[in-house]
Length: 107
Image 1 (cartoon, rainbow, N blue to C red):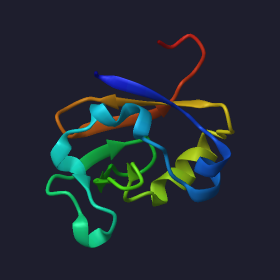
Image 2 (cartoon, helix red, strand yellow; image 1 turned 180 degrees about the vertical axis):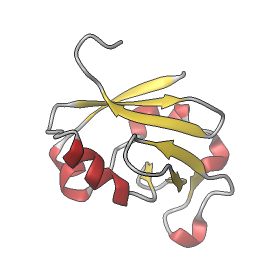
Image 3 (cartoon, rainbow, N blue to C red; image 1 turned 180 degrees about the horizontal axis):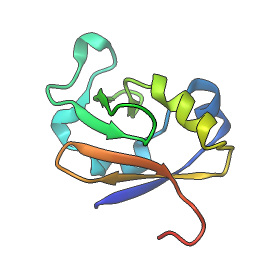
Image 4 (tube, one colour; image 1 turned 30 degrees about the horizontal axis):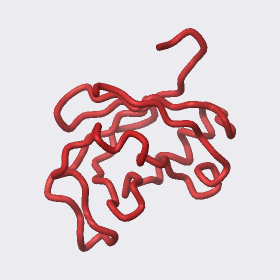
């Protein structure tokens, strides 16, 4: 799997996160940590969203979301995303990912 598509829901918008459970197999096992910051994965991901600098984060394995998620709020706002919209998470390197809104006609 090189990319996955996630549908945004109201909880994503309210809590500034992306549920990754439907595309979990896209991520390397060593980038998935435990439930707390103390249980961070040994390998961080580099997440590019086109907004600011790339974010270095792992995945909180208990919640299946990116652990660092401050960027997600701005991402939702800049792209004016709402429930039902879709986001693409594309693997562009072993630990590098590009996150962007799915626009009509793509994929």
